[in-house]
Image 1 (cartoon, helix red, strand yellow):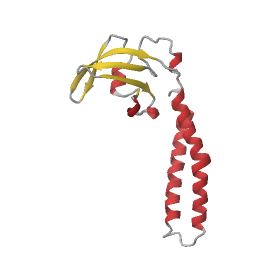
Image 2 (tube, rainbow, N blue to C red):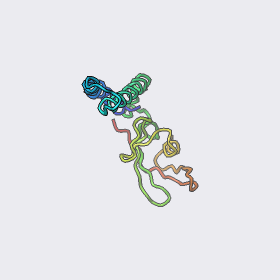
Image 3 (cartoon, one colour):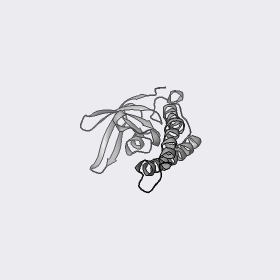
Image 4 (cartoon, one colour):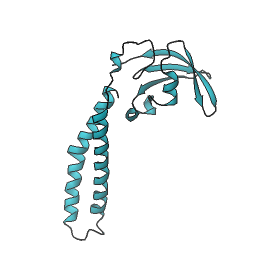
Length: 153
């Protein structure tokens, strides 16, 4: 996981723990004091949302505890594609794309962040500028030419 990804998950955990969960516990307590719980929407929804938050908190705690943080700026071999690299490539239809290879919890396709286990990332791994690699897709093989490799801190 990149340092940014670890920081983002850590912030989400803190927000859930210190802001959302206490607010929801207060709402559920108030709703429980209103009498009949079987038809109390605030109570039923609050309990359900509380379970969702607790599940997410357990997941985040496990991920943050087991995460190995890798800073891309410290990559000693910046001429090859490894975890954390931002890679610009062109495919055989002359479409140029830039992707950043990140951990599974950091994937955001709208920003060009792809998982290190995705087919694109696996095809690009260990490639150098000028290399042509083959990406296997459902439509058949696609050739990608690596144009640029960057390791932003």
